Image (cartoon, rainbow, N blue to C red; front, side, top):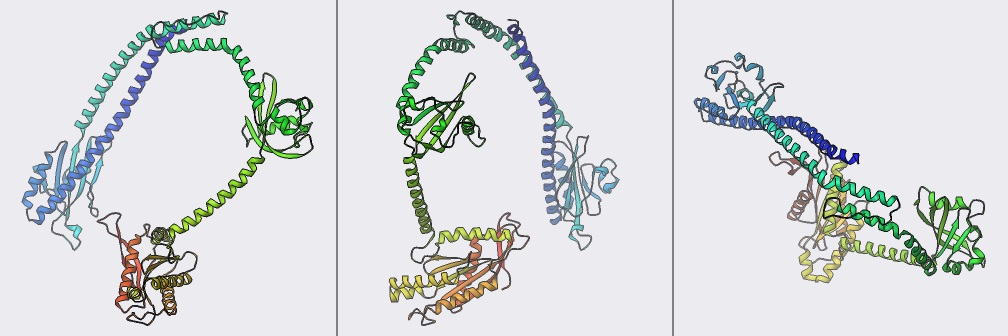
Length: 592
């Protein structure tokens, strides 16, 4: 019982020690984090104030209000923690300062500030410095708007300097941490005392009663039970121990019942079951195994399993069975595989042989389950056939979803998806890509004169020609809508795109589809707009598909306006970045 008495003090003491260590560690970690947070927040504040000051100086100088600079600088000293603010002209002479005796002097003459002022000449960004080991935080930036000293606009910029003392902020943070540490320490001591009292009342005494009851049970008093006295922390433990003792008393009866049920289960199983000793001797088998193999109990019990399993031999039966259990690529507790068995009639057939290994004290018993899989084999073949039919149906359905039913070309949705991917791949691999936009000339007049049936035939004939011309691997001809088509040509530069577009234009004209309503020819013709995108090594973001399509569409419009039945090449599309809109890219067309 001394262990329980020691627990009363050990648990609260350990808790108190752990919490104390955590509080100390938290104090030092918080100190570093608070210091860094203070420096970051003050740095951001100085950056904003210096940027505001530089903008205001520039505005006053543009309005020729230089006499107001002194008032402007003095206003910034009113902010918290600000020690000094000064402004110099391009020559370094101080024109405004929070200290009146600084005006007119060169900033290098200020012994108390010169070592913390580092002028910048080619950078308009705000630079903030924290001096290690001190509470000082300084910021400096360019203040422009002064008359330039040379032709270089930067020569018209002075410097704006601001210094802040963080001592007050650091002290406030330390005071708050010390107060929090003190409050946490007091709370921890009180909690430890409370835990000590609760352990003594509700845990230790109750645990002693539970241990005494278990000792009586182990000494032979099988009726020993734990008396639960009201609700406390260990009531559930007492109930669990009582349940365990009840289970022990019921073990023998349960074993007998389980044996009876096990025998009944074996007798009613549809699969054959045999038990095999370590040396391969068959110990028992059920009625289903007798029916499957054609042997009865008397003929198989005492025989070696190699009599029915072709792969097993009398000499290495145990090794054979262990391979089913101990193969590292198989389940160590049970495994099943197809093996060939031999019936009493001499016929052989495959079965699924499942083996489990049982260790009973120092003896080993193998349990084998023999399943007739002839029906399963038939079902597997049928399932494979159904899967093949389903796969074929899915392929046909997928093809239907991405193709145009009238022309057999890819539809607009598939074009949009593939075109965006090809643009990304072109940019990533630094290879050219071209886009053609094709339109049948005066197709509405064709429909009005010949009817929609012949119009559909015309669309089909033109589509077939497009497929015939653009049949290289990677080419993507698609019906964009109505009489308009698109062709994506990965890896195709501008010259080749124009040549292939011209080949298509001639091929459609050579179909000699009569078109008496055409204003330019007696046969159906097409107009084509083309554009090429050739990424450079510096580009990392692909242009938007809409931008290239718009360029090609404009070229198509130009082809129509120029008389139709022709190819107009828009040129090489080149994306450019607009700095005022990060992440947004526009493009322009290079020379054709």
